[in-house]
Image 1 (cartoon, rainbow, N blue to C red):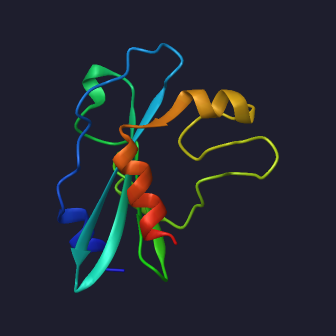
Image 2 (image 1 turned 90 degrees about the vertical axis):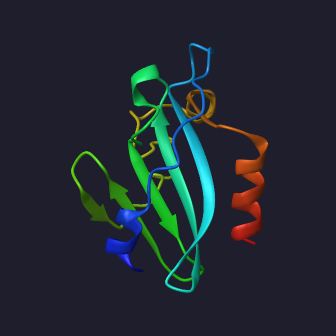
Image 3 (image 1 turned 120 degrees about the vertical axis):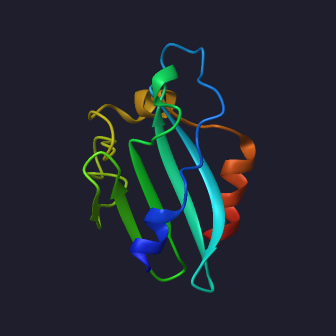
Length: 121
């Protein structure tokens, strides 16, 4: 994975925040070509007006590799999205039960979900 090239790609940005009070994070996706290879970008934004430009975390996948980029720390890790299999902990949020995590973490649109399904099949 070409990390330096990925870092130079502008953030996708959050078009609008959610009015639902329980929503804390919104995911945005895009498929981009980096170094002749398709990459799926998943950027997770805080649901605040001031957080529409820079994501809390940028997760990038290829068919064979993945990386997690933390913009605030300018650091790459290989953390998986879920911190554990029992409590629904996500790397960008506090640990919560699965039902609550589902309400607090949403995608910006149905197209984002379709992109994920198509890329990961």
